Image (cartoon, rainbow, N blue to C red):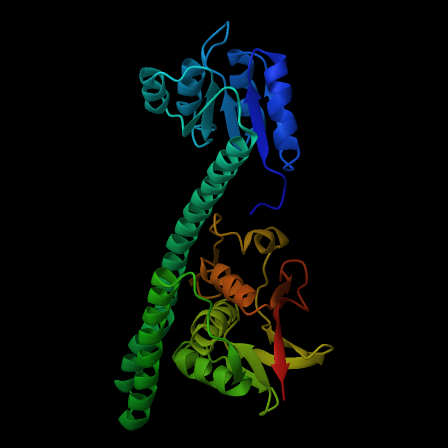
Length: 363
């Protein structure tokens, strides 16, 4: 459940009572903290943030009801489950306990098996709630950055229509538009998949790397042509990588190449090549010779809570949420991503950015 022993704070003005409960829970591998009065309990709870509090009602300074109420009114401690442990078992006291925010109620003398069972249940419920809240936040973040990825295929449609105004080769453009439209629709399906079926894993199989690179290139070709940038692909035609196809094209390759295009100068080149490494892995290198990225930006680039931004060589807006999504998918593929970059201001003769993807592969 947790990668550490859960912390239980026992609050009772009678030291012997603390010792009895601590002995029972200590045998279950709980980490025990104790307070002998209400004020001390409030301070300690805010400091150590226990996973659960066992709280006596009758105490000399402030009673358990007041302690519970104060803890539930504090942002840091309001989510900690509180179980009242007391000799009082009158209905009105039980009712008041729940009204001030208690999660459960135990009466003295303590029955060891009941104590252990209730503590375990409420700590598990707390953990599950935290996981659900975390997943909810991640889901919203994924929706945001996946929708951001729709800009690439939809932008490709717009750019292709502009080209049609200048060329008569409509049949070729039609095929490209259909392909771009398909990728946009598949990205929407991917959004739905991540939101509605977030508990399910992506279906990973081996896909031809060169074919996926070429499909990404066709989506981004108008953008590359607009800056007269060439794409040099040096990948064996039979190399396969273990990924989910649509997310790898739309959310990994498209994002990486889009940034490479934005930060490359007109009439330059972007290179994609591979290097096999032990354990049936392959490194996929995507290299540009553009302006480069600062080390400070690289450090924050995969942090969903930070929005990194840098203008491209033609004042294009870039480095938003795309690479954060790249990292999420590479993690789902059980792969790795590394960024190496040299800023033009520091390395005027060898500037540019290199992104290295490490993936499971086969030939």
